[in-house]
Image 1 (cartoon, helix red, strand yellow):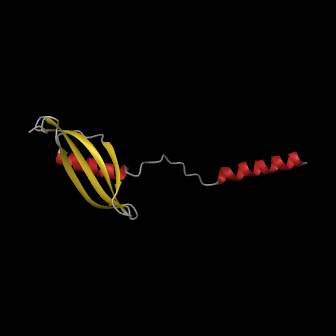
Image 2 (cartoon, helix red, strand yellow; image 1 turned 90 degrees about the horizontal axis):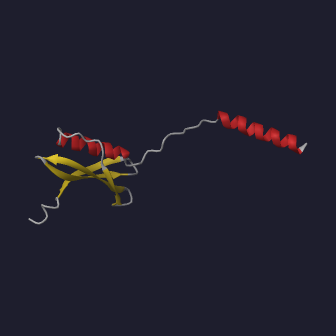
Image 3 (cartoon, one colour; image 1 turned 60 degrees about the horizontal axis):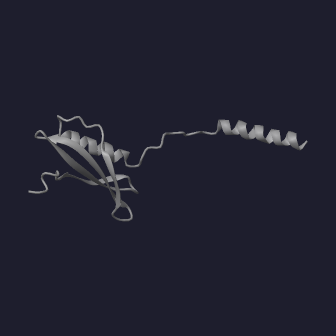
Length: 113
């Protein structure tokens, strides 16, 4: 009797579980949206270069609601390699862009000058 009751409960659990809405979605990093914005800015500033990838440098908390995500890009400027860092300041509560900066990092040979 107990075995039959157990099998009935298991069958019902499996049956009802099959009909529950299942939202299996590949989890995207929360910085992905801002990475796409950074790519668009770099493509606009360097239209001749093909930009596909970036290095995500990380997130810094500025306040309870505001953060900055930083992205590094390698581009060619006037025939020489250049490293650019895009900093995107945004509000994580409202998911809104606040501001954006693009900074050129000095190359190793430029630092001695």
